[in-house]
Length: 167
Image (cartoon, rainbow, N blue to C red; front, top):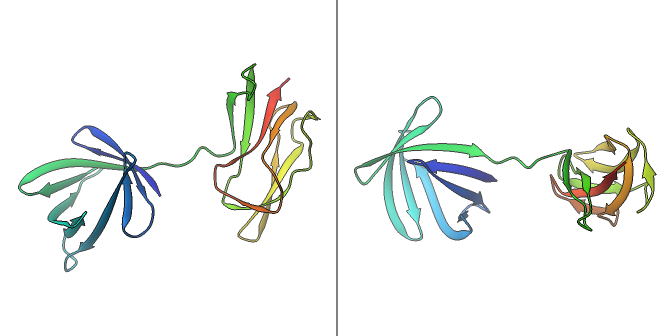
């Protein structure tokens, strides 16, 4: 999971890779954090250095006390942009519309070809996720510039599958 964590007005990109590895602005850190006795107190081990945190939840933020210092902390989940978005075409000549996987799953179909003209609403890809088959449709008419196949492979949420040059 990716987060933007703002501490005292300074923003950090935080990605939790697995239960102990956390990336902060691209730097790996080994982290262990446990709540103490159901209280708003946490034990934090950060790269083998220990801290005791006192955490108070406010409306939109947390107040965290560490070693006698109080820090306002905001945490926002970073969500990948799903569906479609405008992007530069691969050849750098004009705008393209990219179509992405809405959920992680398996790419089961790309029923179009590079150079093919597609109409608004035409199915351009199919993804199976959690036993649901999802048809991804062209929101606008365009010409297929890029296909990210092959089919029958796993795809990540937000992964671009098709790029259309708009007509």
